[in-house]
Structures are given as C-alpha cells and as structure tokens.
Image (cartoon, rainbow, N blue to C red; front, top):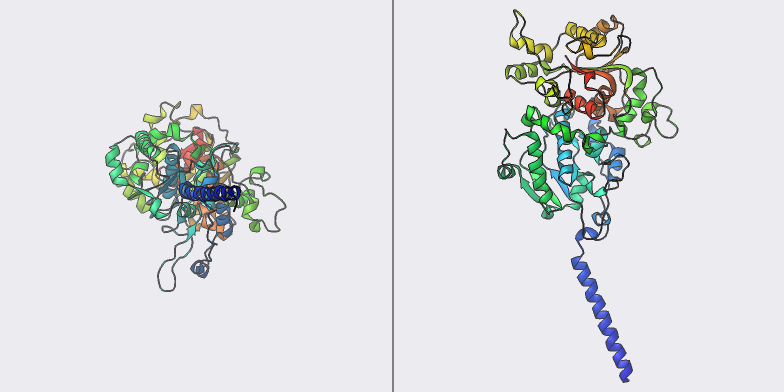
Length: 503
C-alpha cells in the first residue's frame, strides 16, 4: 500500500471513530425527553363500567390526548429547556364535585404562579355518584370522569391567553401525560407538612401570602417533575374561611378564571336545551359546527367549542340554586358550629364589600339578626334552608329590586320573566315551588326539564352551574360550594356583583 493510500485510510479511520464518539456523546448528553416520540398506550375498554352502564367518554379522552402540549417535551422549546410540571397527588377526593372543583381552580392558579404546567386529574365520583356503581359482589366501581367533560379552560389544558399565543410549556397536562413524561424515578416529592413548616404557613397565614410562599418555593425548584403529597395544599378549612378572600384581587384577573371555559360537552348540553332557557335562537357560541345530526342529543362532542361564560348573559333569565337533599342536616351542623358563608360568598360581608374597587360588593351577606321570639339558630337556618314561602318572597324582592340596596338597583319588574331552578330537591317539592312562582307570573323550568344523554347526565351539576353563571341574575345558598363556584365565575366573567343574591 502506497504512503498516500495508507495516510488516507488512517484519516478515514480517525474520522469514523470521531463520528462514532460524537454520536455516543450526543446520545448521552441529550436529555431523555428529546429522544424518539413518546407514545400513549391505546385506550382500553372498561368492562366493569360497561357492565354498570356507565359512560366511558371516549371522545373526551381522545380530545385530551390531542391537546397540543401533549407532545414530546423536547419539541416544545430548545434542547436546553424542558416543561416543568406540578402534580397535586393528594388533592381532595372524598367530596362532591364542587368542593373538588374549588380546589382544582386554586391548584391551577398556584401552578401558574409557579411557572409550571398544572397536572389535571380525572374526577372520580366517590361522593354523590351520578349513577349506581355497586357490582354484583357489593364492591363499588367508581365512575371516572375526564376533566374535559367538565371544563376546557386553563384547568383542563386550554389556553392561558385570549389569542392562544401563550407557551405550550405552561399549559396544563393530563395525569395520563404526567405518568408518561415523569417516570417515578424522576419525580421530586414535596411533603406538604414539611413544606408548610419550612414556609411558616399555618391555619392563620393570610391567603395571598400562602400563595406567594408556595409559588416562590415551587418556582425556585429546578426539578421538572414536582409532586406535592401528604394532603391538599388548599383544604376545606382554608377555602371556607375569610383567609381566602385576599387572593381575589390577583386570582380573579389571572388566566385560571379570566380564560375559564366550559367543556364542549357542556356547550352541547346547553345547545339542545336552550329552548327552556330563552325564547331566542341558540347563540353562535353554543351552536355546533357543520350540519347538526337529526337528533340534537346525538350531536358529536367534537362539533362544539369550549364555551366561555364571558359571553353575554341570557336575557330575562333568573337562576335559582335550591339545595335540598341531605343539606338540611348539613345546615344544622354548619349553623350550630357557627360557620359563615362558603368561600367567595363571603365577599358580601361588610368588612370586604365596603371597598368595591378591590372587593366585589355583593349586596347580600349572612345576616343573623335575631327577630323577637327567634333564636340565632333559626335566623341562620332561614338562609341555609329557606322555606318555600321564603323563596317566593326572595324572588319577588329580587325582581322588584327590593332589599337594603334598593336605591342602587335598576332591575325593572318586567326585565326578568323566566326562572331556571338548579336543584337536588324532590320532584314534588319543585312542582309545588314551580306552581307558586307561576302564580307570580314566571315561566319556570328546572333541572328536571333538561334532556341529557348519559355523558351529560354524568356532569349534570356542571350543566346546571353553567346556566346559573349565564343567567342575568342569580339567587343561591350562601353556605354552598356550588353557589360559591357560580359566584366566582360570574364575577370573573364580568357579571355585576349586584346581580348576585343569597336566600
């Protein structure tokens, strides 16, 4: 072999060896998240759910899987960056939807302040299940409802901006995606009680300060996958106290509430029931895209868009929340323990309503002034468990603009003409209440009048809430978390505080 040929082969060998070494180095230094695309396992049929006749939400689950942020993390930004996630492993689970929902919204807000993507879980209907869930052997098979059956705003992975120009790295992801991109060995666990001790957070710390301390801690952590475990960060005692109110000035204008949206499933339910809410045509925001199916109950989830409550209210509609069922015993416990109104319903108390440049001045609050011959217990129960006669009078007062703020009210008696009652009361009670209200000249409809398919029935409480938020005026139960959620969404979507009332 000539000298030139030998030199060529030596150079070629060195070049190949260098190339192989470079490939090995790059393979080792490029983060795992920039390797070949992650693939989710195919959706599996839930045989037990089918046995019980439960809906399994295949379209909604597919919708969640196709959220644009559910892509290889390394594709979202440059190689040196990675999305940062925040998972609340032990968020509340033993409560009804509205207690859970209160907490989910606050968790979403904390993730936003922490510059992390919120990890949204499905809702597991352990308490107040919408369908029977006992198998033949007596065990329960809990109904799992995807978050996007309820909401599709920031809490369900929706945009954090009006025009969708926000970073996909900050948008919420599903628990399924968290399990895919954050294997257990990469998850950094924050123990709640240890963190609270380090942050000097206790049951007296101001709510806004709780958010600041937690957000600073989570923002400064370099770990991409952080899981808060041990207990909920925002427990019921915090949410139900005055401490939460100091969060409102910043929380109410942040993306969680500002860009809140009901799911396409809720929009679908409202669309084919709109005739009982208004004599007007179905608004564009609730109309399906493309040609509707022969039966409005069979329209596809995918043909509807998320529905934002900031759209104009339904003219002439008064929404009533009539909480009955097991609430009487709950009212007794709350009243006897000296509890006040729930969460955002407290914004009506004089200490906060006196400065409506910061705090929305709700016209009503828990007034337990005891009349002659009446106990404090009886006075508070009038607000928590009002009689049918008291409800009719309250509706009469609202329509006429009566009450302590009558001078500032501008509602004309003829402006409100139709009522929607969201309720868990018996049909017999609602029939009697309906007859009483019809005698006052109202057109009256209730939860019993809704036509819902199985998936919509599973989220019927959210359908009701969406109506109460959309109504021109609203009367609710100050002690109720459902009413509190309606209040915060009405206020954040631009409804005036003066349109919110309590029994």
